[in-house]
Length: 229
Image (cartoon, rainbow, N blue to C red; front, top):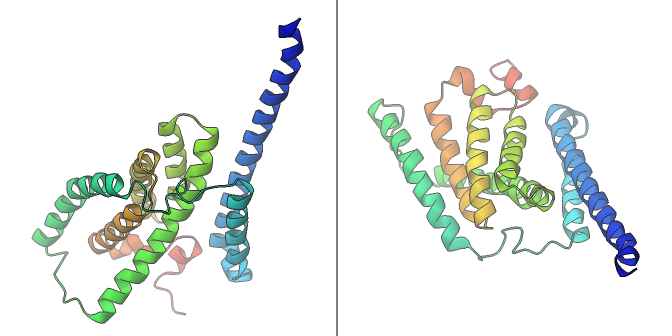
């Protein structure tokens, strides 16, 4: 009698959980579709549409009652995340930098105010990308996908997909996106991830052929590179 009476309640909670996961999945798809539409069309027809997309993401944090610590926006896990990112950076970036210097593709430049400003600006942009990628998309994916390897793979594919049709960036951001997503799944902190992306971005831009990297443009801008304005 007791088991029979408790079954409707159990089924109710199970159905509510399934509905919640479905709603989260739909939300992820809609926001990602909006970002792709902005890259490919809205930036030309509705250049301020990014404000609505960002407002939607921020509103989602409120609705889901996300905490800053969950989103990786505090100092929590900063040390472990930075340590892991540093080890990965040494293993990946140092060989690339050595190759660049030996092939004379990389050269040391004086740290002028303009160069410093460019690095800071690009670093902020990379940090914002990591906020969207990890604090929003990966955080949402982890709430509906228990397997962290799978959630990291999905967010990496989404990150790489946002860089179509740039062949170099598609490969680099998918591979790098998976690595950084794995770090985030273990240590919820995006600050070292943004710095790692910025350093990696400068290396990729310097080492890649201009005929393929197209000044790191994505979307329609990739095809317009080099054309007279």
